[in-house]
Amino acid sequence: MRKFVVAAIAVVAAIALASVAYAANTYDVHVAATHPVAKGSAKKPVPIALDFGYLVTGDTPQLRATPIAQYRIGAEGLVTFPKVAKSCKYAQANQSVVSPACKKAVVGGGIVINRFGPSNDLSSLGVCNLKLTLINLSDAGRHGGLAIRLDGDPPAPGPDSREPGCPLAIHQAIKAPFFNVKIDGLPASELRFDVAQNLLHPVGGVDNSVREAVSHIKKIVGKGKYKGKKKKVGYYTAVGCKGKRRTTRVQFKDEQGRLFTANDKDGKC
Image (tube, rainbow, N blue to C red):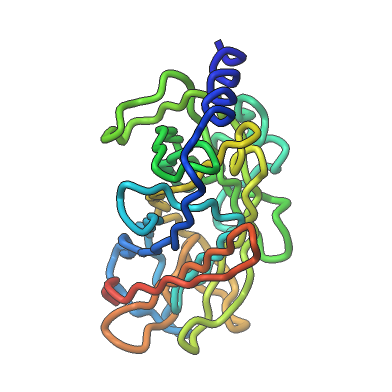
């Protein structure tokens, strides 16, 4: 079945007659909320759960966005303490079936909605929706990080569905370390990751692009050091917010190396 689907997609790419259409992507952070709503401070950090999501579209809904090769995601005054959660290794999270060792390391999840088609026809909108599982890693780097686990199997769902399903079987993880940065002058933990080539281009002549990603990270509480003192913290923790709305920032880098930024200030704090 998989070989047949791959061959079918390759044929579609080979015979596509549409001329190349160049579309400027539109980026929108449309979900950015903490639970509870809290400013937090260095003296009084507040453990939170985090809802987050973004949209990427072409010039119009009828056009597929061009692929994005790298993402950088963070929010003003939100920092992470990965050691408060159980963890596993990236190799365990990246198996065809996630290792049982990662079961207790799951810190969140959601959905990634993709559209694919021939590189020279952005009007082609094949559907590939992938279940998203976020797994805390013990080997993601100095500041910790996540395995962004993506799973989907045939058949593909309908164009308006938000249920997982894809013409190709996808079962893999992306390693995404945290980096300490500042957003609007306040500390932030920025998640950075590169998208694997087989996800950007599942077969020759075919592009895949994310249309929407939505995730929820659980409120997980423990003890951690912040500013040299041991405090009650969460996996995600609010340590500050300048106004009544928190800036959430996503940076998108395309395959040509161009960097684009989307900011959201709808999230209350």
